[in-house]
Image 1 (spheres, rainbow, N blue to C red):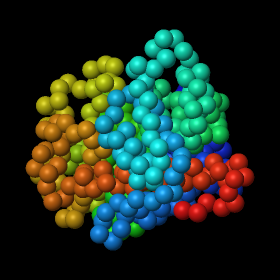
Image 2 (image 1 turned 90 degrees about the horizontal axis):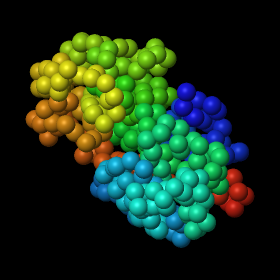
Image 3 (image 1 turned 45 degrees about the horizontal axis):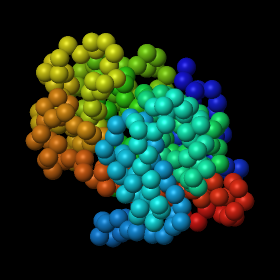
Length: 338
């Protein structure tokens, strides 16, 4: 059991008025809360499809604490904070005092004393962000940028924004296929939770049994499992290909990457089975020729680069909403303005 299972996520994430003060996981949040994030993110994109700059976090300090490697997530959080006019500090964890034996708790308390307002945390341990929000720095806005196999909530929300903007259909009418390494993917777990909360009625998980988590049936309503890819992608509106997470696979779950591509790689023949206007997504980084063929990743149905742009807008929304939720909780503002 990870730490997140020890308490109701919504109790930690929301202030007394029901607004976000931390963003740790999709699970436990309402459709209204997720829609508020999407609407706020949309407001940061202008009519020319460009990101805007706003002084919402002027004078505030955002600290990026990445205990795991990241390119897209850390960079887009930095870009998002700067577009909100915040001060941004990227803490080099590998060279921090944790390498000298200082505890995580002491490191965080020292950083909090440096007038931080928001911690963006990525950690290999499931529940790390919950632990920080609940027991270490409850008065800072804590944003989970990925914790172990547990959750990646901002990735899920940028996926939802991309789906909303590029399909032009309500979630209730969509068929969404998620393909690949479900077992090790925090993105899959968060995407499924977000799709369920937003009302999607047809969520298809396509994977070999070796890449499914124990207790897959717990994913609940409207989720169907397919071992055969051709059946799973038939008449889909959205296909999300996941990365094979070699760094999290602790046993030979795959015979080979070539075998995975033969069985589950997204190629032109398989994409042709989906709806003609089906969009293709990938959280990155891509293993071309393993999860997805280059002709699709770079083709007209791909919205992979849209995901990156939408990721900045979503992270702007989450930074702004959680900061205002914390200020509201502390009685410093009456209502959330964004």
